[in-house]
Every structure is written in C-alpha cells, then in structure tokens.
Amino acid sequence: MSFERIREKLSILADAAKYDVSCASSGGKRKNSSKGLGNNTGMGICHSYTEDGRCVSLLKILLTNHCIYDCAYCVTRKSNDIKRAAFKIQEVVDLTINFYRRNYIEGLFLSSGIFKNADFTMERLVAVAKKLRLEENFNGYIHLKSIPGASDELMREAGLYADRLSVNIEIPTVSGLQLLAPDKKHEDFIKPMEKVKNEIIQYKAEKKIIKSTPRYAPAGQSTQMIIGATGESDQEIMYSATYYYKKFNMRRVYYSGYIPVLEDNRLPAIETEVPILRENRLYQTDWLLRFYGFSVNEIFNKDHKNLDLDIDPKLGWALRNLHEFPIDINTADKRMLARIPGIGMQSVSKILQARRFRKLDWSHLKAIGIALNRAQYFIVCNSKDFYKKELSPITLKNIIIKSTHSKYKKHFSQQLSLFT
Ligand code: SF4
Image (cartoon, rainbow, N blue to C red):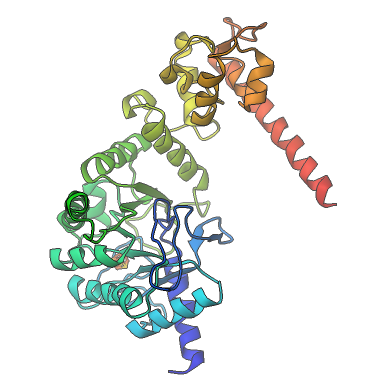
C-alpha cells in the first residue's frame, strides 16, 4: 500500500471521526510494564480542538466509513454520496505506533461504520486493540467504540484490551431514534452497555481475590447523544443522561450538538452550525447533577423545560429559588455552600477548612478564589454584605450578566495587551 493511499485514508477516516465528541480519557491508568511502549496516566491523553471547537484526540479515526445503515443525522450513512475508505487492521496498528513514537499522540480512539454486520466490525476493532497490546506491547490509552448489536463474547474481549468502551446512544429518546435511525433497535445499545457494566463489576470483584486478574475497561464506559436533531427538551435529555449514569455506571455522557450535514426532511432546519452554547449548558448541568448534589427535578420543572442560554444552570436555579438565600458562609452546610452561584466544589472545601479557624469575611473569600461578582448577591459573611432583599430575579440576573461581561472584557483586554 502506497504512502499516498494511507494518507488519503487517514484524511477521509479522521475527518469522518470528528463528529464523535466522546474522546476524553479521564480515569484511565495503565502502567508501562516489560519495557513496553507508552504510559497512560490518570491525567488523560492530549486533545486538540478543531476549528469548530470540537475536541479531538490526536489519533481519532474510523476503521471504515462504509456503513450498512442509513441514520439520518450521520455523514457516513450509506445513502450519502461521499468518498469511502477502510483501514486494514495492521495499518491502524502501524499508524498508532508510528505516531506514538513521534510523540504526535498518546492514545487511540477507534470507531467505525458498520460493514457487513455488527460482529464482523467489532471483531476488527478488537483485533486492532489486541495487536497493539499483545504484539506491540503498547500501554497507551485505547478507547474503542462498541458496535451496537455486537455479541457478548466480543464485548468481553474488547474490555480486556481497551481502557474505555463506549456505545453511542445517539438520540436521547427511543422515539427519536425510531424516527432518525429506524434500522437500529434500542436493545442493540442497551445490551452491550449492560454487558460492559457487569464485566467491570465482575472483574473488579475477582481482582480483589486474585491479584493477577486482568483489568477490564479500567476507564469505564461512556456514551454520547446528539442534541438538537430531534425535538427533545433539555429536561428530557438530562433525565435520559441520569438514567444511563445510574443504570449502567457510565463514567461520562457526552452531548454533541447536531451539525446539519445532510438534507433530510426528518431533520430540523438549523441556521447556526453548532449549538455550542446549548452543549455547554448541558455539560454544566451534568456536572451539577453528578458533583453538586442537584437533581433533575430541581433544575427543571413543567414551566422550565429548557436551560437558559445566557446564564449558567446554577445561577438559573438560584434566581428561581431566591427564598433559599442569603446563605451564611460561616454556618451553612456543604450542600448549601455548593448551591451558591460562583462557588465551585474546590472553594466549598476551602471554605469548610478555613472557617474552622476564623470567621470568614470578603477578603478571605477573595483569597479563596470564589467568583464574588456572582456569589456576593447570595451570601452573608463576617463583614458588610451586598445581599439586597428587594432585588427581583430579573434585575439581579441583568446585574450579574453585566458584571460578568465587563469582567471578561477586562480580562480579554489584559490578555491582548500582553500579546501586543
Ligand atoms: S450506524 Fe453509525 S456510522 Fe452507520 S450511519 Fe448510523 S451512526 Fe452512521
């Protein structure tokens, strides 16, 4: 195979893979052993960002963009008239090793269109990972996409070589999936997720008894849903995400703003290319649900099914619940501290630690690093407070938006002056 042909394949199959955003390696840890190649630490692999703001890990490719399915939202769908290509197993192995040696990448993110059938494709993905681990002694990060409908046996094998496995549920609801990907069955996603979850639990339990038990998908499993291709509200999306976190012990759910790549009357007309802001608000909500003790019912209700795009979801919650404020920084419990806009979990820990020794005032809070431009309107502390009972939610919202914009403007102009 000529170098030119490999380069062409790489450009086609890396470009086709860019729509998959579930590429972070958080949670992976694999030590180098027996003078092998690479060392994947918990810090994660390098990412780069494409022009449209998407995160791509450096060797992020499809094995092939041939596909037997015709999902309406996908550029790879069989009815789309695009250039097709397929890597051989050894080609992907060689590329990974060569790029790794040149320090271009720290891992492999391998997905694929479905050619022939699910097992035929999954077998090849597994073969790449197996060769890298067993023949090349590669200890870098490997993320394999699981093909919906792949057999239990292949899923079991995949987890022995990959750090992370993921099956993309694509559309947040079953009805949306039926509309846009009628060839796919909901069970085809659920079955491999269930298998991976059970294998992780089983291997972990065995490892406690027999130390030599191999690790199974040590960075867990993740999934991705496309946002905006169907009419789901943010509330439905977050209910769906919560279900996948709880039911399948997902490490991450990724939200990918739908990019109109094809014309299809089942798809919505979207003027702006990528609803990045909506993606961002969903990630913030996801964070609040996982780490800040919020529930979906608190963030959404029947009159508020979509997130505000102009403010973050925690501020939105606070403005709808002003009766919960002001919160006294010196006496509030951890749960309530975490609900104050402008205070992250790290700051919560610092506040709890610091107030054991003294009553905290504005100067202490500033030193801790909390975003006072937002927090000051929701708290009282050991000095004159800014809390004003008479401010309406809308006035408060406008004040905070204005102060946030001027803060960023100042920060941005300082940065510019650094470079000029
Ligand atoms: S099965 Fe996957 S690759 Fe094939 S058309 Fe559907 S989303 Fe695209």
